[in-house]
Image (cartoon, rainbow, N blue to C red; front, side, top):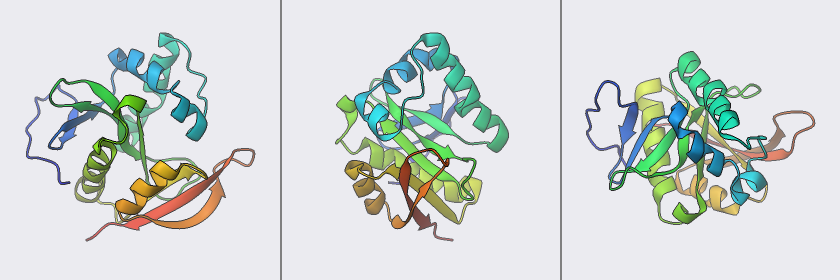
Length: 183
Protein backbone atom coordinates (compact mmCIF):
# COMPACT_ATOMS: atom_id res chain seq x y z
CA UNK A 1 0.00 0.00 0.00
CA UNK A 2 1.45 3.36 -0.99
CA UNK A 3 1.88 6.04 1.67
CA UNK A 4 -0.98 8.54 1.68
CA UNK A 5 -0.14 12.16 0.84
CA UNK A 6 0.75 13.84 4.10
CA UNK A 7 2.42 17.03 5.24
CA UNK A 8 3.45 16.51 8.87
CA UNK A 9 4.24 19.39 11.19
CA UNK A 10 7.96 20.13 11.33
CA UNK A 11 8.35 18.75 14.86
CA UNK A 12 5.87 15.86 14.69
CA UNK A 13 8.50 13.24 13.93
CA UNK A 14 6.11 11.62 11.43
CA UNK A 15 8.13 10.06 8.64
CA UNK A 16 5.27 8.67 6.55
CA UNK A 17 1.64 7.65 6.69
CA UNK A 18 -0.62 5.01 5.22
CA UNK A 19 -4.39 4.73 5.13
CA UNK A 20 -4.58 3.56 8.76
CA UNK A 21 -1.14 4.26 10.21
CA UNK A 22 1.45 6.90 10.99
CA UNK A 23 5.12 5.94 11.26
CA UNK A 24 7.17 8.35 13.34
CA UNK A 25 10.54 8.58 15.01
CA UNK A 26 10.80 7.03 18.45
CA UNK A 27 11.26 9.49 21.30
CA UNK A 28 12.14 9.20 24.98
CA UNK A 29 8.46 9.32 25.96
CA UNK A 30 7.89 6.03 24.07
CA UNK A 31 9.82 4.13 26.74
CA UNK A 32 6.76 2.48 28.33
CA UNK A 33 5.58 1.17 24.97
CA UNK A 34 9.07 -0.08 24.06
CA UNK A 35 9.45 -1.75 27.46
CA UNK A 36 6.24 -3.70 26.83
CA UNK A 37 7.07 -4.57 23.21
CA UNK A 38 10.59 -5.82 23.96
CA UNK A 39 9.18 -8.14 26.62
CA UNK A 40 6.36 -9.61 24.52
CA UNK A 41 6.65 -13.41 24.23
CA UNK A 42 6.99 -13.22 20.42
CA UNK A 43 9.79 -10.61 20.65
CA UNK A 44 11.69 -12.72 23.18
CA UNK A 45 11.24 -15.89 21.11
CA UNK A 46 11.90 -14.59 17.61
CA UNK A 47 14.10 -11.51 18.07
CA UNK A 48 15.80 -12.14 21.38
CA UNK A 49 16.06 -10.79 24.88
CA UNK A 50 17.55 -7.29 24.83
CA UNK A 51 17.72 -7.18 28.62
CA UNK A 52 15.36 -4.21 28.81
CA UNK A 53 13.46 -4.47 32.11
CA UNK A 54 12.98 -0.87 33.26
CA UNK A 55 11.86 2.44 31.79
CA UNK A 56 15.42 3.75 32.04
CA UNK A 57 16.69 0.74 30.07
CA UNK A 58 13.94 1.32 27.48
CA UNK A 59 14.99 4.97 27.14
CA UNK A 60 18.60 3.84 26.71
CA UNK A 61 17.49 1.31 24.05
CA UNK A 62 15.69 4.11 22.13
CA UNK A 63 18.68 6.46 22.42
CA UNK A 64 21.41 3.97 21.48
CA UNK A 65 19.38 2.07 18.87
CA UNK A 66 16.77 3.89 16.77
CA UNK A 67 17.80 7.46 17.62
CA UNK A 68 21.48 6.75 16.98
CA UNK A 69 20.54 5.20 13.63
CA UNK A 70 18.45 8.28 12.69
CA UNK A 71 21.50 10.46 13.32
CA UNK A 72 23.94 8.18 11.50
CA UNK A 73 21.86 7.01 8.54
CA UNK A 74 18.73 9.20 8.41
CA UNK A 75 16.48 6.20 9.01
CA UNK A 76 15.82 3.55 11.64
CA UNK A 77 12.96 1.75 13.35
CA UNK A 78 9.87 3.94 13.61
CA UNK A 79 6.97 3.72 16.01
CA UNK A 80 3.80 2.59 14.22
CA UNK A 81 0.57 4.15 15.52
CA UNK A 82 -3.02 4.04 14.36
CA UNK A 83 -4.49 7.24 12.90
CA UNK A 84 -7.80 6.68 14.63
CA UNK A 85 -6.50 6.71 18.20
CA UNK A 86 -2.82 7.58 17.75
CA UNK A 87 -2.26 4.32 19.63
CA UNK A 88 1.23 2.76 19.36
CA UNK A 89 0.94 -0.78 18.01
CA UNK A 90 4.47 -1.71 16.96
CA UNK A 91 7.67 -0.69 15.25
CA UNK A 92 8.74 -0.92 11.62
CA UNK A 93 11.57 0.56 9.66
CA UNK A 94 14.99 0.32 8.11
CA UNK A 95 18.05 -0.93 9.97
CA UNK A 96 21.72 -0.80 8.99
CA UNK A 97 23.25 -3.72 10.90
CA UNK A 98 26.89 -4.47 11.42
CA UNK A 99 27.73 -7.59 9.46
CA UNK A 100 25.13 -7.00 6.73
CA UNK A 101 25.99 -5.22 3.52
CA UNK A 102 22.36 -4.32 2.79
CA UNK A 103 19.80 -2.34 4.77
CA UNK A 104 17.35 -4.58 6.63
CA UNK A 105 13.57 -4.18 6.94
CA UNK A 106 12.58 -4.79 10.55
CA UNK A 107 9.20 -4.95 12.27
CA UNK A 108 7.50 -6.13 15.46
CA UNK A 109 3.97 -5.63 16.81
CA UNK A 110 2.18 -6.03 20.10
CA UNK A 111 0.31 -9.34 20.10
CA UNK A 112 -3.17 -7.78 20.11
CA UNK A 113 -2.40 -5.97 16.82
CA UNK A 114 -1.07 -8.95 14.87
CA UNK A 115 -3.10 -10.54 12.08
CA UNK A 116 -4.91 -7.31 11.12
CA UNK A 117 -2.78 -6.28 8.14
CA UNK A 118 -0.93 -3.52 10.02
CA UNK A 119 2.49 -5.13 9.55
CA UNK A 120 2.00 -5.47 5.80
CA UNK A 121 0.70 -1.92 5.47
CA UNK A 122 3.59 -0.39 7.41
CA UNK A 123 6.23 -2.59 5.75
CA UNK A 124 4.97 -1.71 2.26
CA UNK A 125 5.24 1.98 3.15
CA UNK A 126 8.75 1.45 4.54
CA UNK A 127 9.77 -0.26 1.29
CA UNK A 128 8.46 2.69 -0.72
CA UNK A 129 10.45 5.01 1.56
CA UNK A 130 13.56 2.84 1.11
CA UNK A 131 13.28 3.15 -2.66
CA UNK A 132 12.05 6.74 -3.08
CA UNK A 133 13.76 8.54 -0.19
CA UNK A 134 16.83 6.49 0.71
CA UNK A 135 17.45 5.37 -2.88
CA UNK A 136 17.97 1.69 -2.14
CA UNK A 137 17.92 -0.82 -4.97
CA UNK A 138 17.98 -3.88 -2.74
CA UNK A 139 16.76 -4.58 0.77
CA UNK A 140 16.98 -7.62 3.02
CA UNK A 141 15.05 -8.94 6.01
CA UNK A 142 15.98 -11.43 8.73
CA UNK A 143 13.74 -13.88 10.54
CA UNK A 144 14.21 -16.57 13.12
CA UNK A 145 14.27 -19.99 11.46
CA UNK A 146 10.76 -20.83 12.74
CA UNK A 147 9.04 -17.43 12.52
CA UNK A 148 6.42 -18.55 10.01
CA UNK A 149 4.23 -15.42 10.36
CA UNK A 150 7.10 -13.08 9.41
CA UNK A 151 8.24 -15.41 6.64
CA UNK A 152 4.72 -15.36 5.11
CA UNK A 153 4.64 -11.56 5.29
CA UNK A 154 8.03 -11.22 3.61
CA UNK A 155 6.96 -13.52 0.78
CA UNK A 156 3.76 -11.45 0.30
CA UNK A 157 5.96 -8.35 0.10
CA UNK A 158 8.04 -9.88 -2.70
CA UNK A 159 11.07 -11.06 -0.70
CA UNK A 160 12.81 -14.31 -1.62
CA UNK A 161 14.80 -16.58 0.67
CA UNK A 162 18.55 -16.36 0.02
CA UNK A 163 20.40 -18.17 2.79
CA UNK A 164 20.79 -19.00 6.44
CA UNK A 165 23.35 -16.92 8.36
CA UNK A 166 24.57 -15.90 11.79
CA UNK A 167 25.09 -12.20 12.49
CA UNK A 168 27.42 -13.12 15.36
CA UNK A 169 29.55 -16.24 15.55
CA UNK A 170 27.85 -17.28 18.79
CA UNK A 171 24.41 -16.00 17.79
CA UNK A 172 21.39 -17.91 16.52
CA UNK A 173 20.93 -18.80 12.88
CA UNK A 174 18.56 -16.56 10.91
CA UNK A 175 16.91 -16.74 7.52
CA UNK A 176 17.96 -13.96 5.15
CA UNK A 177 15.38 -12.82 2.62
CA UNK A 178 16.06 -10.21 -0.09
CA UNK A 179 14.14 -8.09 -2.53
CA UNK A 180 15.20 -5.90 -5.40
CA UNK A 181 13.33 -2.60 -5.34
CA UNK A 182 11.96 -1.45 -8.71
CA UNK A 183 13.87 1.39 -10.31
